[in-house]
Amino acid sequence: MNKIGFNVLAWSAVVSDELLPIIDRLKGIGYDGMECLIGSPDKVAYQRIGEHVRSLGMEATCVFVVGKDENPISEDAAVRLKGLDRIKWAIDRAHDMQAKVVCGPFHSAHAIFAHHAPQEQEYGWGAEVLHAAGEYAAQADITLALEALNRFECYLCNTMEQLSRLLKAADHPNVRAMFDTHHANIEEKKVAGAIQTITPLLAHVHISENDRGTPGDGHVNFDEAFSALANINYTGWLTIEAFSRNDPDFANSIGVWREYSRPWDIAEDGFKFIKQMCQKHGLDEQVSVNHAL
Image 1: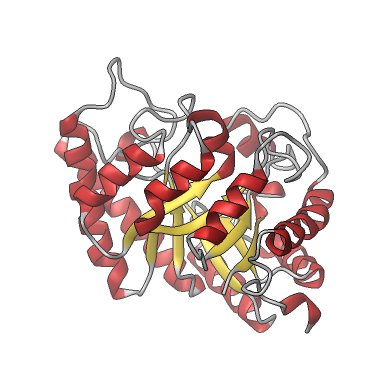
Image 2: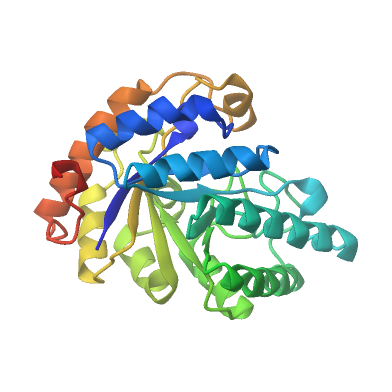
């Protein structure tokens, strides 16, 4: 059964009690889950948020990134080990929340580039780290859903073809893939073909507009995306990831320099849009009716 989620990065990158009223309102709109960034150091905050989410009958998923000093594809083995340790830390925080999915581009350091195209050795290093991370995630029954990013944020995996190559090399059932409509809109020739390529490994989907505003307000070909997901009988999360300048530090770190849509407009209109697209393309019977309960 598909479930609809919303990433609270539209308000804050910090996991704290300030998210509680936001989660409450998301529940009121009809969302089945919330997604948050794993990065805040307060371990107890993850437990509190997880408990609150469950008390509402919702679920949590998480997104995560790594930086230069913990790069899983660094030529320095010590840095790669730091990357694995950091991923394990993120898995622990997700476990604190009782989340079952940790998604994101943590196959390599975000926005750190080499002076060459991705190399075979780098895929090998990344696969080795991800396999070990998968072993750790399996103990907590957590799926790692790796993400391909556009060329301005990553050089290792821009497409589903590249991501599939990496994950097949990682060769672990808990190491799978995420598809993000924003990045695919930039990098893929055809959305349907990209989804078909990643189908055997697909575990999570981000619904995100070309400008990171309200899904359906831009030019992403959502008809093609939802049709392709229906054709492969996709039953995972459909989670909106949109950004704003509500959290200036986070916004500055990812190049968000203007408001695309107001966060609550994104949440309310985006939920309606996903429901409409699911009904139009035959996913409506799979989507949770949590909002009607």
